[in-house]
Length: 250
Image (cartoon, rainbow, N blue to C red; front, top):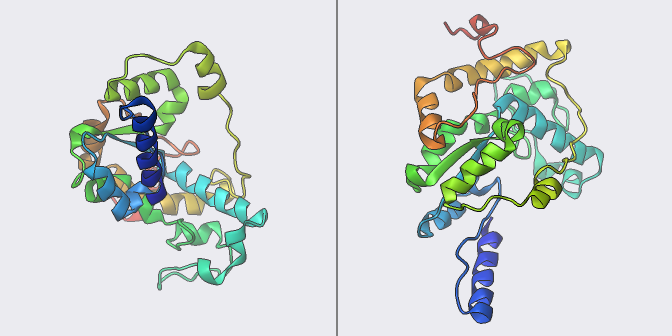
């Protein structure tokens, strides 16, 4: 993320040279910012910074990222040619497949590979640990990406209000940019397949305790102005409460 900040500095300098003043609003988007201690400290050092954290239903998030990485491998991405630098690291207690790329079962059971790590699905823990100690809650907004897809106008209005921006998109911009279809990665795995029920339940058990904790729900509510759609959204028609007795949870 560091180059983004260098680019912002350059943009501000050009604005001063050309218009005689600094830009009033600049946005930076990068999913790695929260994972980068330097970037987060740089963010926190910016006066009146406001941080928007997009939260996606975690099981769909994990499946999507796995499919994305597998698509890159299938397409011959440069990074994928170096297996040694992108090793699969698994828990000692787990008898993994030994395959590269790792199997869906491997990553669901805790194997880590090029950013795939089920611990990174514990969004509330990450926000508590890496965001709130640096950026005050009043300047953090959590937005549900499911809500963005289902109610884009309302979601963008929420974001604009958070920033104090009162002019909404012109209709032409809305049609050509906001509503533009997005390409999707090829689906190498579909956790909704009946053959993946065991893996679905393994991941659901891992997430269950975190996403049903009262403190987690209160955190999202406090940082979202009440907008966040349910983070308990059912996956494949089976929510996190399904088969939880198998998790050893009551």
